[in-house]
Length: 148
Image (cartoon, rainbow, N blue to C red; front, side, top):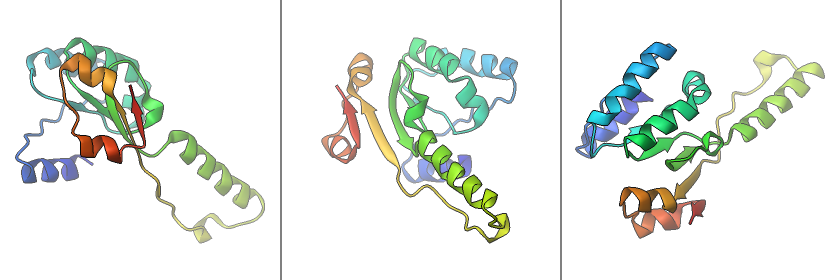
């Protein structure tokens, strides 16, 4: 995902600066640097480590007054400007369907690989107002949900 984000950033003339973390200490260090990134935004990947630490991330980003974009509505936390991605509940449901098929005798190697077919865009206008951001009308119209 990082590579694709960097490619898109270059096309849009937006700088992408990864703040990677694999441990709690690395995450704490990365989040501490946010206060020096005025005028930037923060995008979180769907990595399980980041999802497990979503409250810490949201708190730090909110404190730094940065827009936060997360990969799924299930990530909900105070300060999240928008989420874009598939639902963790939907993915869990699809996994359960696969488990059911396997328990009924299907061979895992014979089952097709599925990719999320429905992505949701949710925008929280309360956060946008708090940050002094204006969300373009065409973006609002394309959102699946707008929190007012």
